[in-house]
Length: 292
Image 1 (cartoon, rainbow, N blue to C red):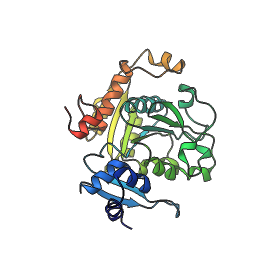
Image 2 (cartoon, helix red, strand yellow; image 1 turned 90 degrees about the vertical axis):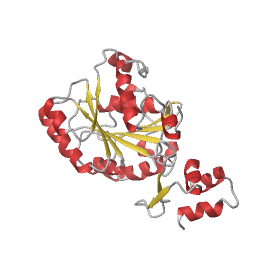
Image 3 (spheres, rainbow, N blue to C red; image 1 turned 120 degrees about the horizontal axis):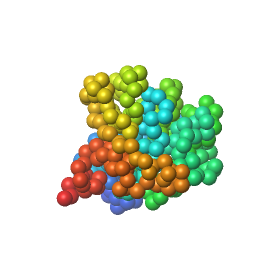
Image 4 (cartoon, rainbow, N blue to C red; image 1 turned 60 degrees about the horizontal axis):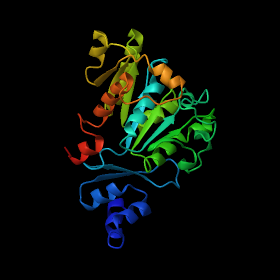
């Protein structure tokens, strides 16, 4: 049955919260459907017995369903720390899940930065996402990576789709690889945060990758570097942000602390968040609902 028709039928007997619970969609989505403000698309997952994923485009729910892949064209550019900072920053206003897809080596630096226990992790996922995530802060959960087999990697698309139902934003820390795992994550994402250290060959590789995803929202982030003239020419069609070098950041992470909002690093991360939600000085929710 069409989701819009189902919502309208249930509205004759149930309140909005009950409808949202029954259909496993956000209450804001129910409101927008009933008010005729939502464009709804259902996408069936690869698992035949899984519920379809609901995509909703509307004014009030524009902040939901943000699937953000933080990616690179070479290692060592700071993707993991930017993924961490962005997730932490966004969690001040919305519910965020950070997914570590650095699977080959049992995770990247995120587990170390956050001093996470070895268990639970992405490898134990069996249709119940909440059994796998680790709460870090209020509204900020992490799904860390174990060593995984190829068969387990096929769960990634299903995990992302299930996470859409519980989180306002999903941030994915991608490894420096060009394989099916990375391609799947990029295809599931609607936003790419492309991190660069502005070296010549890296810029060319990154621009080539991004050219395949012109339909997505793309933000190029120069981490502790200046974008050269050549880089600016390659990235002229994208939003760009420079994150200044922060001498205090390594000490903060070594202590397994989270960086404060007033640090140089987090001021740069805030610029990325502002671009993600097309806001200036207003918060995400005020921006969406038109508050001052």
